[in-house]
Image (cartoon, rainbow, N blue to C red; front, side):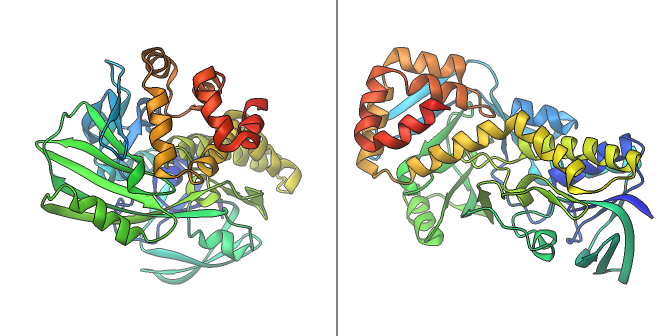
Length: 382
C-alpha cells in the first residue's frame, strides 16, 4: 500500500510527489498522458518566486523580462520598467519534465499513461498501459487539472468560472525585456505577447466565450507567421472545499489560479507543499477524517487565500468594463507617481497590496466609484 497517490504530473502534482517523498512517504504519481509536459497548456511566463518554488535548474528559462506595456484600444500605452528581472519565460515542457525528474530522484514512483476511473475508500481503480489495476493508498492528492476526474468521482463542486485560451508562437520583432498586454483583445480578460527571444514571441488570449474568433482577430492585427499553436483552459474561483474523503485538491484541480493574470504555477506548488505537510500528519497520526484534512485548507488560505479572494473580485470588475472604460483607467494610471508606485510595490504573486494601495488614490478611486461603487467599497474593506 502506498501512503500517497498523486494524480497528475504537472507542476503541482510533481511538487506534491516530491515533497511527500522527501517527507519519507511511499508515493506514487500517476499521469494520464504518455509524455510529461505534453501537450503544453500554458503561456510560459512565471514570476521569479514561482520559478524558485519549482526548485529546478535555470536551463528551463528561455528569456527574462523586467516590465510590461499595457495598450489601450486607441494604441496609447502604459509603460512599466522595473529595471530588474520580474518574470521568466520558460520552456514549459522542459519545466514539467524537470519537476517530474526531481520527484523521482526524491523517491517517488511515476506511472505514465495511467487513468483514474474510480476511487472507493483506500482503493484507486486505474486503467492504462499496464491494463486495469487497483492501487491501494492511504491518501490521494488530486493535481489533475481543471477537468479533475478525482473531483468528479467525489462529487465536488467545481470552480465557478472556466476561461478558454489560445496561444501561438509567431515570428515577431519586439523588445525582449517587456511583455505586451492588450485588454481590448478579450472583453473579459486580456491578450498578450510574450517575447521568447530570437525574434520569436508567444501571442495569446483567454476569454469565457468565442475564444477562437477573438484570437483570430487579435492574431490578424500582427500578420505574422505562426510556428506553433497551443490551447487550454483556466479555472477561476476556488472550489468551496479543497479536501474530503482522504483527498486533498491542489493547483488547477482546486481552482487555485490567480484571477488577475491566469498564472497557476506559484499557488499550485505552494498548495502542493501544504498538502504534503497535511498528508504526513494524517499518516503519522493514522487519522484521515475531515477535521484533520481541514488543516490543509486552513494553511493554504493563510498563505495565499486572500490573494485569490481579492483577485476574483478584481476579475469580476474587469469583465464588467467596456473597452472605453478600460481606456479611461489606463489614462488615469499614466500619472508618473502612480507608475512609480506600481513599479515599487508590484508583485505578480501577491497583487492585493498594490491593488489596495491604488484604489485609495483619489484619481483612481474617483473613476472606480463612478464605474462600480459598491464593489470597490467591498474590496477596500478587505
